[in-house]
Length: 277
Image 1 (tube, rainbow, N blue to C red):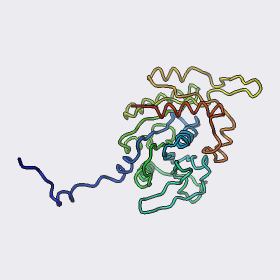
Image 2 (image 1 turned 90 degrees about the horizontal axis):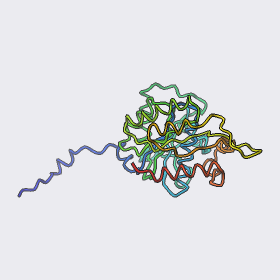
Image 3 (image 1 turned 45 degrees about the vertical axis):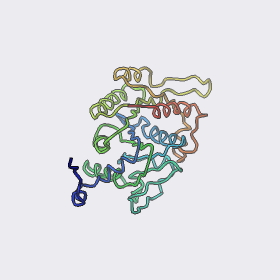
Image 4 (image 1 turned 60 degrees about the horizontal axis):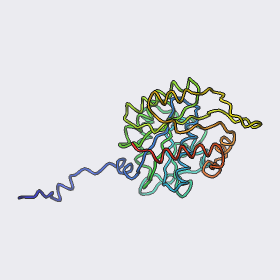
């Protein structure tokens, strides 16, 4: 029986695997954090998910894909650090031994300058973040998306060939829940598994009596989760300390599981780590 053996010439003609594909194949799990509307704490969840996974020993990359409102560098105290370029591409900023970050905010000369880009420019930037940043071998790439279901989420979902899943962030108000249902439907249409919903600002603890007050109502998130057959990963109470820690750029050092908020977030990380498609 004659065996088909490729000639050297045939091998040279074989197209090279695109750099973006090679980059993404070196990352075990890609997770996008999204919300239907702004102001629900999506970046807080993305930053803490990346930081807590890294604390547990995973190699983690955090991509701030919110082109118009990048806030991740501020939370980690790296807003004045500029990334370098080597033979492999743009080098993401190392926050800890296990955590690297990339954001458009790190590339701007003036951090107060607005990014005034149309859709094609935003999509090109996101492609470059995935293709030209030397992420290396990672256990997780956490992508902090802008609110809504527009260009950026669509670009990420289409460019990354195998997305582990999406974490959807909302607050208890009905207005937010209308939008979160659209986010879940968006993920379903693009065949991205929904890991679950994080309910942020789920009440506030009275500093005098320790009673929890549901200032934005209760029950809507559970109903939305039931309607779409997804899990509620956790309920994060409002805590002024979290805002202070983020403003001081110490998300990776000052939030711990001894805090009520940190304890609740730990269960969210547990669910993400144990999620299987």
